[in-house]
Image 1 (cartoon, rainbow, N blue to C red):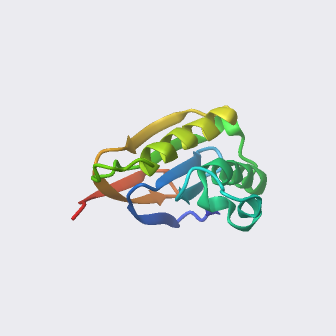
Image 2: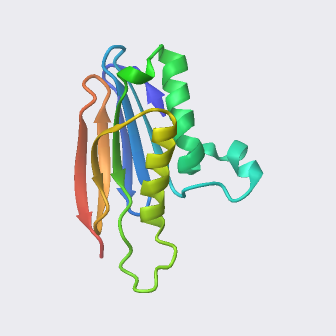
Amino acid sequence: MVTDGEFDAIRTFSLSTCVAVTAYCPRKKAAGMVHVVLPSPFRHRDRTERPGYFALTGIPLLIETICRRYGCRREDLQIKMFGGIESNEELDIFQVGKQNINTARYALKRLGLRVKNSDLGGNISRTIEMEVKTGLVKVSHQPLT
């Protein structure tokens, strides 16, 4: 999701092991967010059918879209990351939250982008709302039950 609507807000709810990455261009007053569920696609067709579902494909798509649609430059983008909680399960061999965080960081690094601010890990679910006019991201924390 990307927008330059001055009074718009972008929201995502109940981030647990998922990770949200936001991009804000203060020069163009444009904002975008991707809510990734898994680190990378399992099958080749997932890359084209559901690119935003995965950190490895969704993050480059977010950056490409906000830059192309609104004329943002990568070096102007303010990047923030949220989510990726740690599982309470003793036998969590997949560690999806941790994998999502690491893959998101890897994807951003490949694009030459650094994370300005983050709220990651732990065992608290997050809901986030980003104001397009200012780029401000509000985070609400919800304990897991």
